[in-house]
Image (cartoon, rainbow, N blue to C red; front, side, top):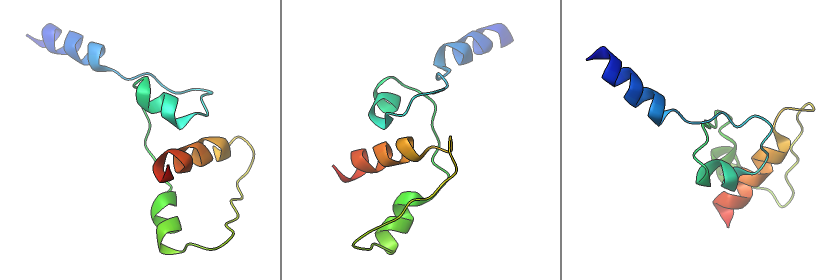
Length: 73
């Protein structure tokens, strides 16, 4: 019985989005993604005419912008 449950879990596993910067691709191709930044909520609550997004390199700026584009489109 345990073996059947393990196989089912293996089949439902989502892929890890290593190196993918396109949010729509993450959604359409069933990649694993959790947004823990609260970025959309923060933007909706504190919207400005101009918003500056500063983050260190390799910290998901492109993916965050792609996520915002999909959300507001």
